[in-house]
Amino acid sequence: MFHPLKRLNEAAKQAVHAVQSYFVLAWNAVRFIVARPFYGGDIIQQMDSIGVQSLAIVLLTGFFTGMVLALQFSVQMAQFGATMYLGRLVTASMIRELGPVLAGLMVAGRVGSGIAAEIGSMRVTEQIDALNTLGTDPIKKLVTPRLLAALVMLPVLTILADLIGIFGGNVIASLYVGIPSSLYWRTVWEQIAAGGFVLRYIPTDFIQGLFKPFVFGALISITGCFFGLQTSGGTEGVGKATTRTVVTASVLILTTDYFMTQILLYILP
Amino acid sequence: MSGDPVREGVDGGDDTAVSDLGFDGEADTVPRERASGYGRDATPVIELSHVYLSFESPLLDDISLKVAHGETLVIAGESGTGKSTILKLMLRLLVPDKGDVLIDGERINDLSFEEALEVRQKMGMVFQGAALFDSMTVFENVAYPLREHTDLDDDEIEQRVRQKLEYVDLEPDKVMAQLPAELSGGMKKRVGIARGIANDPAILLYDEPTSGLDPLTTGTITRLIRKLQREMGVTSVVVSHDMRSAFQVATRIALLAKRRIVFLGTPDEMAASKDHYIRDFLGDL
Image (cartoon, rainbow over all chains, first blue to last red; front, side):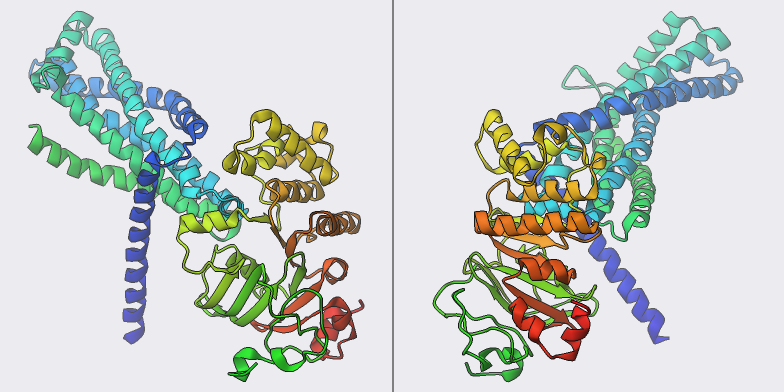
């Protein structure tokens, strides 16, 4: 009776400690954004790795998601004779939810695992210790550039995923449902304008759609770095770190998406 | 020397063998035959004073030792006795549970992370597996500390990198553009040493510099450590269980067993020791 409670106590302590370490890492990574020296080359390299090299998979996912949305909606909306509003539904779904979430999940799988594997390998081969002994803070050198790159590139990838997804919807609307492209794009704009504008020119939907990937970028990069830096136990440890990163980042993306949607709908109805 | 005999061991017991190194060598339960009685005026470059460390179980108990300027101390012992941990304490990658670690007389236990980074700039470290940054070329690896901590321009950095690579008997034109994955084990170790000395540190720490190397390459690395001692006068701490190499490079040897230093003295004193554990440890040497 005593031992299970003791174990539970230990597990709870470890969990709290892990959460604390996660936030300390995140805080330090943010703090170093404004501290010298700046690793500009590393930031550019990470922007290429996180953004440019993820482009193909994000565009592919966005395009087919837009097509499948249009396909599903067209079947349902045909029952009410409302297929002309296909553009509005595809646009709302892509910009508000699917663009950010799918781009986030794709990048979590491709980039988050890569970050964890790279930093985990550096940990087990003592390269992190080497950085320390050479007078470099590993968080500043490894975590901050990845965080900055992800903060910039996730919104960019999301915009492109949104665009290609809406275009995918257009392909199905015109080829399969028979809605003219001009009508489709007009309803796309009607949807964007329907939510109103912030500061006169920025559509409210865009605020929602771009705030989320910003947060997802932080979650993916910090989670990958966190599990990478915590790696122990050789190559097996590296494998575990990558798996934990993908699972944790994906769960965090999906759960924070819900809460962010709640908050954003309250602030920007 | 008075006080707790357990914590002070037999350190003060034999002050007759005078060395020219400048201070006391301290250890617990050190056999009588070890050298001691260094003068007490000079500040040791590295000092561990009654250091205790444990993780899930105790790892180091009451470790005390001092390393003088220009000295090469070899820390020997069986695997898993905490030899490399002592290096990490010196680098302040770990902080002891109890006791003090001093570098140039400055207590480093309580330094902030940023302050510790500054102290580490006085030191070069050669890792067991070389720990070269595998995404960087040999040139970038050796140039790394220069880019981080000096204002040298690109030409000066290249000149310095070439000089250091030549110093460790590597041909700069052949290796500079290579990635660590393209190098042999011995070449990696030498590049690791070149990186360690790039900033001309006052202290060099080696973690198992000859492990996993063939006898010829082991000889090359051993000669290189002696060359660095002779020509650069760096203070060195070498963690090794390769006693043949240790006897060639050491000014003094500390033997670690069961979480404590059980011997601290010169190689000659170790070779002459009648202690059973030391005889067993040295084997056929």
